[in-house]
Length: 506
Ligand code: ADP
Image 1 (cartoon, rainbow, N blue to C red):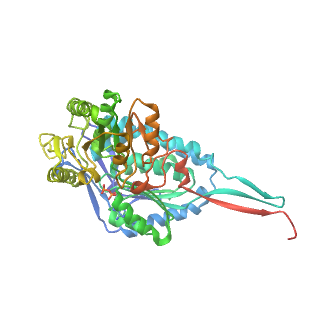
Image 2 (image 1 turned 135 degrees about the vertical axis):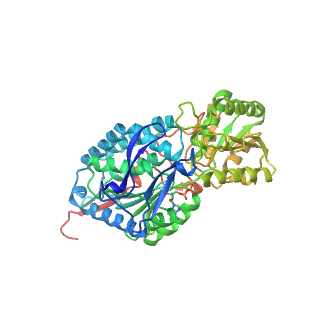
Protein backbone atom coordinates (compact mmCIF):
# COMPACT_ATOMS: atom_id res chain seq x y z
CA UNK A 1 0.00 0.00 0.00
CA UNK A 2 1.59 3.39 -0.96
CA UNK A 3 2.37 5.12 2.32
CA UNK A 4 0.73 8.35 1.14
CA UNK A 5 -2.55 6.43 1.04
CA UNK A 6 -2.48 5.41 4.68
CA UNK A 7 -2.31 7.19 7.97
CA UNK A 8 -1.22 5.82 11.33
CA UNK A 9 -3.94 6.53 13.90
CA UNK A 10 -4.51 6.10 17.61
CA UNK A 11 -8.20 5.94 18.50
CA UNK A 12 -9.60 7.50 21.69
CA UNK A 13 -9.57 4.04 23.33
CA UNK A 14 -5.81 3.77 22.69
CA UNK A 15 -6.04 1.31 19.80
CA UNK A 16 -3.40 1.95 17.14
CA UNK A 17 -3.98 0.97 13.55
CA UNK A 18 -3.20 1.83 9.92
CA UNK A 19 -6.08 3.60 8.20
CA UNK A 20 -6.25 3.29 4.40
CA UNK A 21 -7.27 6.59 2.80
CA UNK A 22 -7.43 5.78 -0.93
CA UNK A 23 -9.83 4.13 -3.33
CA UNK A 24 -9.68 0.34 -3.42
CA UNK A 25 -9.87 -0.67 -7.09
CA UNK A 26 -8.54 -3.95 -8.49
CA UNK A 27 -7.23 -4.90 -5.03
CA UNK A 28 -4.96 -1.84 -5.10
CA UNK A 29 -5.09 1.53 -3.40
CA UNK A 30 -5.18 4.56 -5.66
CA UNK A 31 -5.79 8.27 -5.12
CA UNK A 32 -8.84 9.99 -6.58
CA UNK A 33 -8.28 11.31 -10.10
CA UNK A 34 -8.96 14.92 -9.10
CA UNK A 35 -7.20 14.68 -5.72
CA UNK A 36 -10.39 15.55 -3.82
CA UNK A 37 -10.75 14.26 -0.29
CA UNK A 38 -13.41 14.12 2.42
CA UNK A 39 -12.50 14.62 6.06
CA UNK A 40 -14.05 12.28 8.60
CA UNK A 41 -14.81 13.92 11.91
CA UNK A 42 -15.32 12.51 15.37
CA UNK A 43 -18.95 13.31 16.24
CA UNK A 44 -18.21 13.00 19.96
CA UNK A 45 -15.82 15.94 19.98
CA UNK A 46 -16.21 17.61 16.66
CA UNK A 47 -13.87 20.55 17.13
CA UNK A 48 -11.22 20.94 14.43
CA UNK A 49 -8.52 19.06 16.32
CA UNK A 50 -10.82 16.07 16.27
CA UNK A 51 -10.71 15.41 12.56
CA UNK A 52 -9.93 11.72 12.24
CA UNK A 53 -8.60 11.41 8.69
CA UNK A 54 -9.03 12.72 5.18
CA UNK A 55 -9.83 10.08 2.61
CA UNK A 56 -10.00 10.24 -1.16
CA UNK A 57 -13.38 10.94 -2.73
CA UNK A 58 -14.20 9.19 -5.99
CA UNK A 59 -14.95 11.29 -9.06
CA UNK A 60 -17.11 10.10 -11.93
CA UNK A 61 -13.92 8.95 -13.66
CA UNK A 62 -12.92 6.92 -10.62
CA UNK A 63 -16.32 5.26 -10.54
CA UNK A 64 -15.84 4.39 -14.19
CA UNK A 65 -12.45 2.86 -13.38
CA UNK A 66 -13.97 0.79 -10.62
CA UNK A 67 -16.82 -0.38 -12.84
CA UNK A 68 -14.34 -1.38 -15.55
CA UNK A 69 -12.36 -3.39 -12.99
CA UNK A 70 -15.54 -5.11 -11.83
CA UNK A 71 -16.59 -5.88 -15.42
CA UNK A 72 -13.19 -7.33 -16.22
CA UNK A 73 -13.21 -9.45 -13.07
CA UNK A 74 -16.67 -10.78 -13.92
CA UNK A 75 -15.31 -12.27 -17.14
CA UNK A 76 -11.96 -13.37 -15.78
CA UNK A 77 -11.65 -17.16 -15.36
CA UNK A 78 -10.32 -16.73 -11.82
CA UNK A 79 -13.78 -15.53 -10.78
CA UNK A 80 -16.11 -16.64 -13.58
CA UNK A 81 -14.98 -20.26 -13.43
CA UNK A 82 -14.40 -20.42 -9.70
CA UNK A 83 -16.55 -23.25 -8.34
CA UNK A 84 -19.37 -22.01 -6.13
CA UNK A 85 -17.93 -23.94 -3.19
CA UNK A 86 -14.72 -21.92 -3.48
CA UNK A 87 -16.65 -18.68 -3.44
CA UNK A 88 -18.03 -19.86 -0.12
CA UNK A 89 -14.51 -20.62 1.10
CA UNK A 90 -13.45 -17.05 0.26
CA UNK A 91 -16.43 -15.59 2.09
CA UNK A 92 -15.66 -17.75 5.14
CA UNK A 93 -12.05 -16.58 5.07
CA UNK A 94 -13.26 -13.00 4.95
CA UNK A 95 -15.50 -13.69 7.95
CA UNK A 96 -12.50 -15.15 9.81
CA UNK A 97 -10.42 -12.06 9.06
CA UNK A 98 -13.21 -9.78 10.26
CA UNK A 99 -13.31 -11.83 13.45
CA UNK A 100 -9.54 -11.48 13.90
CA UNK A 101 -9.83 -7.71 13.41
CA UNK A 102 -13.05 -7.36 15.34
CA UNK A 103 -11.81 -4.89 17.98
CA UNK A 104 -10.13 -2.65 15.44
CA UNK A 105 -13.18 -2.58 13.19
CA UNK A 106 -15.49 -1.85 16.13
CA UNK A 107 -13.14 0.90 17.28
CA UNK A 108 -13.20 2.58 13.89
CA UNK A 109 -16.97 2.27 13.67
CA UNK A 110 -17.43 3.93 17.05
CA UNK A 111 -14.89 6.65 16.39
CA UNK A 112 -16.31 7.61 13.00
CA UNK A 113 -20.02 7.06 13.69
CA UNK A 114 -20.39 7.76 17.41
CA UNK A 115 -22.23 4.54 18.30
CA UNK A 116 -21.42 2.92 21.65
CA UNK A 117 -18.38 0.65 21.38
CA UNK A 118 -20.15 -2.26 23.07
CA UNK A 119 -22.88 -2.08 20.42
CA UNK A 120 -20.36 -1.93 17.57
CA UNK A 121 -18.33 -4.82 19.01
CA UNK A 122 -21.17 -7.12 20.01
CA UNK A 123 -23.93 -5.98 17.69
CA UNK A 124 -22.59 -4.71 14.38
CA UNK A 125 -19.54 -6.98 14.17
CA UNK A 126 -21.50 -10.08 15.15
CA UNK A 127 -23.88 -9.25 12.35
CA UNK A 128 -21.09 -8.77 9.82
CA UNK A 129 -19.44 -12.08 10.67
CA UNK A 130 -22.75 -13.97 10.87
CA UNK A 131 -23.99 -12.59 7.56
CA UNK A 132 -20.80 -13.42 5.68
CA UNK A 133 -20.78 -16.98 7.07
CA UNK A 134 -24.48 -17.46 6.32
CA UNK A 135 -24.03 -16.53 2.68
CA UNK A 136 -20.76 -18.46 2.45
CA UNK A 137 -22.84 -21.54 3.21
CA UNK A 138 -25.35 -20.67 0.51
CA UNK A 139 -22.75 -20.23 -2.26
CA UNK A 140 -23.04 -23.85 -3.43
CA UNK A 141 -26.63 -24.46 -2.36
CA UNK A 142 -28.54 -22.33 -4.80
CA UNK A 143 -29.15 -23.95 -8.17
CA UNK A 144 -31.69 -24.42 -10.92
CA UNK A 145 -34.46 -26.89 -11.70
CA UNK A 146 -35.35 -29.42 -14.36
CA UNK A 147 -38.86 -28.87 -15.71
CA UNK A 148 -40.45 -31.54 -17.88
CA UNK A 149 -43.03 -30.35 -20.38
CA UNK A 150 -43.91 -32.86 -23.14
CA UNK A 151 -42.45 -36.31 -23.89
CA UNK A 152 -40.13 -34.65 -26.41
CA UNK A 153 -39.11 -31.58 -24.53
CA UNK A 154 -37.92 -30.36 -21.22
CA UNK A 155 -36.10 -27.35 -19.88
CA UNK A 156 -33.61 -26.72 -17.17
CA UNK A 157 -32.85 -23.50 -15.40
CA UNK A 158 -29.54 -22.17 -14.19
CA UNK A 159 -28.87 -19.31 -11.83
CA UNK A 160 -26.47 -16.74 -13.17
CA UNK A 161 -24.99 -13.70 -11.49
CA UNK A 162 -26.73 -10.41 -12.29
CA UNK A 163 -23.34 -8.95 -13.22
CA UNK A 164 -21.66 -5.80 -11.98
CA UNK A 165 -23.47 -4.62 -8.86
CA UNK A 166 -23.27 -1.06 -7.54
CA UNK A 167 -23.91 -0.99 -3.80
CA UNK A 168 -24.57 2.28 -1.98
CA UNK A 169 -24.56 2.08 1.78
CA UNK A 170 -25.55 4.44 4.59
CA UNK A 171 -23.74 5.75 7.66
CA UNK A 172 -25.84 4.28 10.49
CA UNK A 173 -24.50 0.68 10.30
CA UNK A 174 -21.64 1.00 7.80
CA UNK A 175 -20.03 -2.43 8.09
CA UNK A 176 -23.23 -4.34 8.68
CA UNK A 177 -24.91 -2.78 5.64
CA UNK A 178 -21.82 -3.63 3.58
CA UNK A 179 -22.02 -7.26 4.74
CA UNK A 180 -25.75 -7.50 3.98
CA UNK A 181 -24.98 -6.53 0.41
CA UNK A 182 -21.62 -8.18 -0.20
CA UNK A 183 -22.58 -11.57 1.25
CA UNK A 184 -25.36 -12.48 -1.21
CA UNK A 185 -23.74 -10.66 -4.14
CA UNK A 186 -20.50 -12.62 -3.83
CA UNK A 187 -22.18 -15.92 -2.99
CA UNK A 188 -24.04 -15.61 -6.31
CA UNK A 189 -20.86 -14.84 -8.30
CA UNK A 190 -21.34 -11.12 -8.99
CA UNK A 191 -18.69 -8.45 -8.89
CA UNK A 192 -19.16 -5.29 -6.90
CA UNK A 193 -18.43 -1.59 -6.64
CA UNK A 194 -19.45 -0.57 -3.16
CA UNK A 195 -19.65 3.07 -2.12
CA UNK A 196 -19.34 4.00 1.53
CA UNK A 197 -21.40 6.84 2.96
CA UNK A 198 -19.19 9.95 2.92
CA UNK A 199 -19.87 10.50 6.62
CA UNK A 200 -18.45 7.13 7.73
CA UNK A 201 -16.01 5.60 5.22
CA UNK A 202 -13.22 4.56 7.57
CA UNK A 203 -14.31 1.08 8.69
CA UNK A 204 -15.24 0.06 5.13
CA UNK A 205 -11.82 1.09 3.84
CA UNK A 206 -10.09 -0.96 6.53
CA UNK A 207 -12.38 -3.88 5.65
CA UNK A 208 -11.29 -3.57 1.97
CA UNK A 209 -7.80 -4.76 2.87
CA UNK A 210 -9.33 -7.90 4.38
CA UNK A 211 -11.04 -8.65 1.05
CA UNK A 212 -7.66 -8.75 -0.70
CA UNK A 213 -6.14 -10.71 2.18
CA UNK A 214 -8.93 -13.29 2.00
CA UNK A 215 -7.92 -13.97 -1.60
CA UNK A 216 -10.73 -12.49 -3.69
CA UNK A 217 -9.35 -11.93 -7.22
CA UNK A 218 -8.63 -8.30 -8.21
CA UNK A 219 -11.68 -6.33 -9.28
CA UNK A 220 -14.25 -8.62 -7.67
CA UNK A 221 -14.89 -6.11 -4.87
CA UNK A 222 -13.99 -2.46 -5.37
CA UNK A 223 -14.51 -0.12 -2.44
CA UNK A 224 -14.79 3.62 -2.87
CA UNK A 225 -15.67 6.57 -0.74
CA UNK A 226 -17.38 9.53 -2.33
CA UNK A 227 -20.22 11.99 -2.23
CA UNK A 228 -23.68 10.73 -3.00
CA UNK A 229 -24.44 13.25 -5.71
CA UNK A 230 -21.09 12.58 -7.44
CA UNK A 231 -19.89 9.01 -6.90
CA UNK A 232 -23.29 7.58 -5.94
CA UNK A 233 -24.99 9.22 -8.89
CA UNK A 234 -22.21 8.10 -11.27
CA UNK A 235 -22.72 4.53 -10.11
CA UNK A 236 -26.52 4.63 -10.30
CA UNK A 237 -26.49 6.10 -13.81
CA UNK A 238 -23.56 4.08 -15.19
CA UNK A 239 -24.44 2.24 -18.39
CA UNK A 240 -22.26 -0.75 -17.53
CA UNK A 241 -23.63 -1.41 -14.05
CA UNK A 242 -26.30 -4.12 -13.99
CA UNK A 243 -27.73 -3.62 -10.54
CA UNK A 244 -27.99 -1.03 -7.81
CA UNK A 245 -28.59 -2.01 -4.21
CA UNK A 246 -29.18 0.97 -1.96
CA UNK A 247 -29.90 1.63 1.68
CA UNK A 248 -30.70 5.19 2.70
CA UNK A 249 -33.44 7.78 2.64
CA UNK A 250 -36.60 7.48 0.57
CA UNK A 251 -35.87 10.80 -1.14
CA UNK A 252 -32.49 9.57 -2.37
CA UNK A 253 -33.97 6.20 -3.36
CA UNK A 254 -36.38 7.99 -5.68
CA UNK A 255 -33.50 9.73 -7.41
CA UNK A 256 -31.57 6.47 -7.66
CA UNK A 257 -34.56 4.69 -9.16
CA UNK A 258 -34.75 7.36 -11.85
CA UNK A 259 -31.04 7.21 -12.57
CA UNK A 260 -31.08 3.41 -12.63
CA UNK A 261 -33.68 3.50 -15.39
CA UNK A 262 -31.07 4.62 -17.96
CA UNK A 263 -30.24 0.99 -18.67
CA UNK A 264 -33.10 -0.64 -16.77
CA UNK A 265 -30.93 -1.72 -13.86
CA UNK A 266 -32.13 -4.31 -11.44
CA UNK A 267 -32.74 -2.50 -8.12
CA UNK A 268 -33.02 -3.29 -4.46
CA UNK A 269 -33.97 -0.34 -2.27
CA UNK A 270 -34.13 -0.28 1.52
CA UNK A 271 -35.33 3.12 2.59
CA UNK A 272 -37.01 5.08 5.36
CA UNK A 273 -39.67 4.33 7.92
CA UNK A 274 -41.98 5.70 10.58
CA UNK A 275 -42.63 2.38 12.21
CA UNK A 276 -45.49 1.99 14.68
CA UNK A 277 -45.28 0.20 18.03
CA UNK A 278 -48.72 -0.66 19.40
CA UNK A 279 -49.26 -1.28 23.12
CA UNK A 280 -52.61 -2.86 24.04
CA UNK A 281 -54.18 -2.65 27.51
CA UNK A 282 -53.28 -6.29 28.25
CA UNK A 283 -49.58 -5.88 27.38
CA UNK A 284 -46.86 -6.79 29.86
CA UNK A 285 -46.02 -3.22 30.84
CA UNK A 286 -42.34 -3.80 31.70
CA UNK A 287 -41.75 -5.73 28.51
CA UNK A 288 -43.50 -3.11 26.37
CA UNK A 289 -41.62 -0.26 28.02
CA UNK A 290 -38.21 -1.86 27.63
CA UNK A 291 -38.67 -2.68 23.96
CA UNK A 292 -40.36 0.62 23.15
CA UNK A 293 -37.31 2.36 24.59
CA UNK A 294 -34.82 0.20 22.69
CA UNK A 295 -36.97 0.51 19.59
CA UNK A 296 -36.42 4.23 19.27
CA UNK A 297 -33.46 5.18 21.45
CA UNK A 298 -30.86 2.57 20.47
CA UNK A 299 -28.20 3.55 17.89
CA UNK A 300 -29.11 7.17 18.76
CA UNK A 301 -32.45 6.64 17.03
CA UNK A 302 -30.63 6.28 13.73
CA UNK A 303 -32.28 3.09 12.54
CA UNK A 304 -34.55 2.85 9.53
CA UNK A 305 -36.81 0.41 11.41
CA UNK A 306 -36.90 2.52 14.61
CA UNK A 307 -40.34 2.29 16.18
CA UNK A 308 -40.77 6.05 16.20
CA UNK A 309 -44.56 6.16 16.61
CA UNK A 310 -45.80 4.59 19.82
CA UNK A 311 -49.56 3.96 19.91
CA UNK A 312 -50.96 3.16 23.35
CA UNK A 313 -54.44 2.00 24.31
CA UNK A 314 -56.43 4.25 26.68
CA UNK A 315 -56.46 1.86 29.65
CA UNK A 316 -52.68 1.62 29.93
CA UNK A 317 -51.71 5.01 28.49
CA UNK A 318 -50.89 6.88 31.72
CA UNK A 319 -48.97 3.95 33.21
CA UNK A 320 -47.04 3.44 29.99
CA UNK A 321 -46.10 7.10 29.66
CA UNK A 322 -44.83 7.21 33.25
CA UNK A 323 -42.88 3.97 32.78
CA UNK A 324 -41.40 5.12 29.47
CA UNK A 325 -40.21 8.40 30.98
CA UNK A 326 -38.69 6.47 33.89
CA UNK A 327 -36.96 4.13 31.48
CA UNK A 328 -35.40 7.07 29.65
CA UNK A 329 -34.16 8.46 32.94
CA UNK A 330 -32.75 5.15 34.15
CA UNK A 331 -31.25 3.74 30.97
CA UNK A 332 -30.29 6.56 28.67
CA UNK A 333 -26.78 7.19 29.89
CA UNK A 334 -25.54 9.61 27.28
CA UNK A 335 -21.90 10.37 26.67
CA UNK A 336 -18.55 9.05 25.47
CA UNK A 337 -19.32 6.11 23.19
CA UNK A 338 -16.11 4.39 24.32
CA UNK A 339 -17.38 4.35 27.94
CA UNK A 340 -18.81 0.88 28.55
CA UNK A 341 -21.80 2.31 30.46
CA UNK A 342 -22.91 4.57 27.64
CA UNK A 343 -26.25 3.79 26.06
CA UNK A 344 -26.43 6.76 23.71
CA UNK A 345 -23.59 8.48 21.87
CA UNK A 346 -23.68 11.56 19.66
CA UNK A 347 -25.63 11.89 16.41
CA UNK A 348 -23.44 11.12 13.43
CA UNK A 349 -23.08 14.60 11.93
CA UNK A 350 -23.98 18.23 12.40
CA UNK A 351 -26.50 17.88 9.56
CA UNK A 352 -28.35 15.10 11.40
CA UNK A 353 -28.13 16.95 14.71
CA UNK A 354 -29.58 20.11 13.10
CA UNK A 355 -32.29 18.09 11.40
CA UNK A 356 -33.46 16.52 14.67
CA UNK A 357 -33.37 19.86 16.49
CA UNK A 358 -35.44 21.40 13.69
CA UNK A 359 -38.08 18.71 14.26
CA UNK A 360 -38.22 19.72 17.94
CA UNK A 361 -39.16 23.22 16.78
CA UNK A 362 -41.65 21.82 14.27
CA UNK A 363 -43.30 19.72 16.99
CA UNK A 364 -43.66 22.75 19.24
CA UNK A 365 -45.04 24.88 16.41
CA UNK A 366 -47.53 22.18 15.51
CA UNK A 367 -48.86 22.29 19.05
CA UNK A 368 -47.69 18.89 20.26
CA UNK A 369 -46.67 18.54 23.91
CA UNK A 370 -42.96 18.14 24.60
CA UNK A 371 -42.94 15.57 27.43
CA UNK A 372 -39.18 15.46 27.85
CA UNK A 373 -35.89 16.15 26.08
CA UNK A 374 -35.78 18.42 23.06
CA UNK A 375 -32.50 20.00 24.09
CA UNK A 376 -28.92 19.48 22.95
CA UNK A 377 -26.40 18.39 25.54
CA UNK A 378 -23.50 20.79 25.54
CA UNK A 379 -21.74 19.47 28.63
CA UNK A 380 -20.48 16.31 26.89
CA UNK A 381 -16.92 15.76 25.67
CA UNK A 382 -15.43 19.07 24.59
CA UNK A 383 -18.91 20.56 24.35
CA UNK A 384 -18.90 20.36 20.59
CA UNK A 385 -20.25 16.85 20.12
CA UNK A 386 -23.65 16.24 18.55
CA UNK A 387 -25.51 15.03 21.64
CA UNK A 388 -29.28 15.33 21.94
CA UNK A 389 -31.53 14.44 24.87
CA UNK A 390 -34.02 11.62 24.27
CA UNK A 391 -37.11 13.49 23.12
CA UNK A 392 -40.76 12.55 23.56
CA UNK A 393 -43.80 14.34 22.17
CA UNK A 394 -47.40 13.53 23.10
CA UNK A 395 -50.63 15.24 22.11
CA UNK A 396 -49.88 14.54 18.47
CA UNK A 397 -52.32 14.16 15.63
CA UNK A 398 -52.05 12.26 12.38
CA UNK A 399 -51.58 15.28 10.17
CA UNK A 400 -48.57 16.60 12.07
CA UNK A 401 -45.20 16.44 10.38
CA UNK A 402 -43.63 14.94 13.50
CA UNK A 403 -46.17 12.12 13.23
CA UNK A 404 -45.63 11.51 9.50
CA UNK A 405 -41.98 12.29 8.73
CA UNK A 406 -38.90 10.27 9.56
CA UNK A 407 -36.73 12.20 12.04
CA UNK A 408 -33.92 9.65 12.44
CA UNK A 409 -32.92 10.50 15.97
CA UNK A 410 -33.80 9.84 19.63
CA UNK A 411 -37.20 11.36 18.95
CA UNK A 412 -40.55 9.65 19.42
CA UNK A 413 -44.22 10.55 19.29
CA UNK A 414 -46.74 8.82 21.55
CA UNK A 415 -50.42 8.70 20.67
CA UNK A 416 -53.47 7.13 22.33
CA UNK A 417 -56.08 4.89 20.78
CA UNK A 418 -59.26 3.11 21.93
CA UNK A 419 -59.94 0.12 19.70
CA UNK A 420 -57.90 -2.42 17.77
CA UNK A 421 -59.38 -1.18 14.52
CA UNK A 422 -58.32 2.35 15.33
CA UNK A 423 -54.82 1.18 16.24
CA UNK A 424 -54.39 -0.57 12.90
CA UNK A 425 -55.73 2.45 11.00
CA UNK A 426 -53.33 4.74 12.85
CA UNK A 427 -50.44 2.35 12.30
CA UNK A 428 -51.14 2.17 8.57
CA UNK A 429 -51.68 5.89 8.07
CA UNK A 430 -48.17 6.46 6.74
CA UNK A 431 -46.43 6.42 3.40
CA UNK A 432 -43.91 4.02 4.91
CA UNK A 433 -44.10 0.30 5.67
CA UNK A 434 -40.90 -1.04 7.16
CA UNK A 435 -41.07 -2.33 10.76
CA UNK A 436 -43.94 -2.56 13.24
CA UNK A 437 -44.44 -3.92 16.73
CA UNK A 438 -47.43 -5.13 18.72
CA UNK A 439 -47.55 -5.72 22.46
CA UNK A 440 -50.38 -7.86 23.81
CA UNK A 441 -50.83 -11.09 25.78
CA UNK A 442 -53.70 -12.06 23.51
CA UNK A 443 -52.32 -14.50 20.97
CA UNK A 444 -55.15 -14.23 18.53
CA UNK A 445 -55.05 -10.48 18.53
CA UNK A 446 -51.26 -10.45 18.11
CA UNK A 447 -51.47 -12.49 14.91
CA UNK A 448 -54.53 -10.66 13.63
CA UNK A 449 -52.83 -7.29 14.00
CA UNK A 450 -49.62 -8.65 12.50
CA UNK A 451 -51.63 -9.70 9.46
CA UNK A 452 -53.35 -6.34 9.09
CA UNK A 453 -50.34 -4.10 9.46
CA UNK A 454 -48.82 -2.80 6.23
CA UNK A 455 -45.14 -3.46 6.88
CA UNK A 456 -42.31 -5.68 5.76
CA UNK A 457 -41.67 -6.86 9.31
CA UNK A 458 -43.72 -7.25 12.50
CA UNK A 459 -42.34 -7.85 15.97
CA UNK A 460 -44.71 -9.47 18.45
CA UNK A 461 -43.77 -8.38 21.97
CA UNK A 462 -40.41 -7.14 20.77
CA UNK A 463 -38.79 -4.50 18.57
CA UNK A 464 -35.82 -4.26 16.19
CA UNK A 465 -35.12 -7.99 15.99
CA UNK A 466 -32.96 -8.52 12.94
CA UNK A 467 -31.22 -11.70 11.95
CA UNK A 468 -29.30 -12.67 8.84
CA UNK A 469 -31.53 -15.72 8.45
CA UNK A 470 -34.69 -13.61 8.23
CA UNK A 471 -35.74 -11.51 5.20
CA UNK A 472 -35.57 -7.77 5.80
CA UNK A 473 -37.24 -5.04 3.77
CA UNK A 474 -40.21 -2.79 3.36
CA UNK A 475 -43.45 -2.17 1.52
CA UNK A 476 -44.94 1.13 0.30
CA UNK A 477 -42.23 3.82 0.30
CA UNK A 478 -39.93 1.81 2.56
CA UNK A 479 -38.35 -0.10 -0.25
CA UNK A 480 -38.29 -2.64 -3.03
CA UNK A 481 -36.96 -6.16 -2.64
CA UNK A 482 -35.59 -8.05 0.34
CA UNK A 483 -32.17 -8.42 1.90
CA UNK A 484 -30.98 -11.20 4.22
CA UNK A 485 -32.28 -14.73 4.48
CA UNK A 486 -32.70 -16.94 1.46
CA UNK A 487 -34.83 -14.17 -0.03
CA UNK A 488 -31.74 -11.98 -0.11
CA UNK A 489 -30.21 -14.23 -2.77
CA UNK A 490 -33.05 -13.57 -5.19
CA UNK A 491 -31.79 -10.05 -5.68
CA UNK A 492 -28.41 -11.23 -6.91
CA UNK A 493 -29.10 -13.91 -9.52
CA UNK A 494 -30.98 -14.18 -12.79
CA UNK A 495 -32.68 -17.38 -13.84
CA UNK A 496 -31.88 -18.62 -17.33
CA UNK A 497 -34.21 -21.20 -18.89
CA UNK A 498 -32.63 -23.64 -21.37
CA UNK A 499 -35.11 -25.50 -23.54
CA UNK A 500 -34.16 -28.94 -24.87
CA UNK A 501 -35.85 -30.61 -27.85
CA UNK A 502 -35.29 -34.38 -28.21
CA UNK A 503 -37.49 -34.96 -31.25
CA UNK A 504 -35.70 -34.92 -34.59
CA UNK A 505 -38.73 -33.96 -36.75
CA UNK A 506 -41.51 -31.47 -36.10
P1 ADP B 1 -28.81 10.63 4.48
O1 ADP B 1 -29.67 11.73 3.97
O2 ADP B 1 -29.29 10.09 5.75
O3 ADP B 1 -27.35 10.92 4.48
P2 ADP B 1 -28.86 9.31 1.95
O4 ADP B 1 -29.95 8.47 1.46
O5 ADP B 1 -28.70 10.64 1.30
O6 ADP B 1 -29.05 9.43 3.50
O7 ADP B 1 -27.47 8.55 1.85
C1 ADP B 1 -27.32 7.17 1.81
C2 ADP B 1 -26.27 6.82 0.78
O8 ADP B 1 -26.72 7.30 -0.48
C3 ADP B 1 -24.90 7.45 1.01
O9 ADP B 1 -23.91 6.53 0.59
C4 ADP B 1 -24.94 8.65 0.09
O10 ADP B 1 -23.64 9.06 -0.35
C5 ADP B 1 -25.72 8.10 -1.08
N1 ADP B 1 -26.37 9.15 -1.90
C6 ADP B 1 -26.83 10.35 -1.50
N2 ADP B 1 -27.33 11.04 -2.53
C7 ADP B 1 -27.17 10.28 -3.64
C8 ADP B 1 -27.50 10.43 -5.03
N3 ADP B 1 -28.07 11.52 -5.49
N4 ADP B 1 -27.18 9.41 -5.86
C9 ADP B 1 -26.62 8.28 -5.40
N5 ADP B 1 -26.29 8.07 -4.12
C10 ADP B 1 -26.56 9.05 -3.23
